[in-house]
Structure formats: structure tokens, C-alpha cells
Length: 90
Image 1 (tube, rainbow, N blue to C red):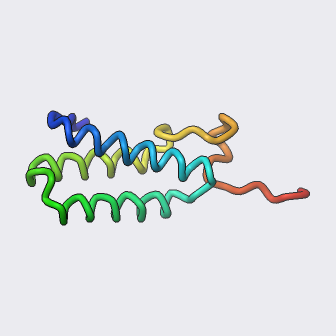
Image 2: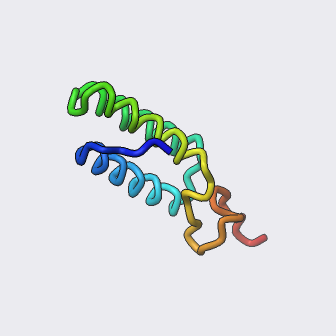
Image 3: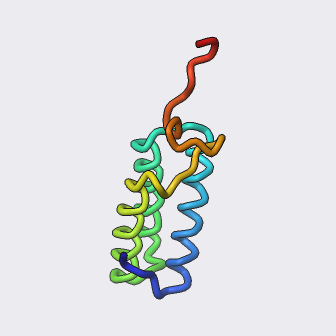
């Protein structure tokens, strides 16, 4: 796994991970998490806060992290129903 060396990159990674965990706890789908992460990374890229190399490393790391289901835990601890809303009354 690509590691982050820049302290600001690490902070952005943690912020993005925390936000995605929060979205997951509200049963957002993997595609919605991807859209959120893409928007966050795009905004970060536009600000120019990170140099190109650090930005690319962060983007690659987030890409791998967000598609790995083991990165998330379900709100009730059950990874089996992580991204699926349970139907009420069934």
C-alpha cells in the first residue's frame, strides 16, 4: 500500500475516512461514498494545498481504501448488511 509521508495528506486521508464512515453508518452505498470522495479530492486538487505527488498518492490510497469492504464496519457491527437498508416490517 502506498504510504503517505506528508502530514497534511495524512490529515486529509483521516478526514475523508471519518466522513465515509459517517456516511456508511447512515447506509449510503459504495457508489455514493465514491462520489463523495471524488468531490473531496477534486476540491483538494483545485486548492493546490498538496503538491502533485502527494495528491496522487492520496488519490491512489483512497481509491484502494474505498473499494475494500473491510475498510468499513456496519452500524450494528454486521458487515453483511453494511450497505443495504433493511426493509421495515419484513
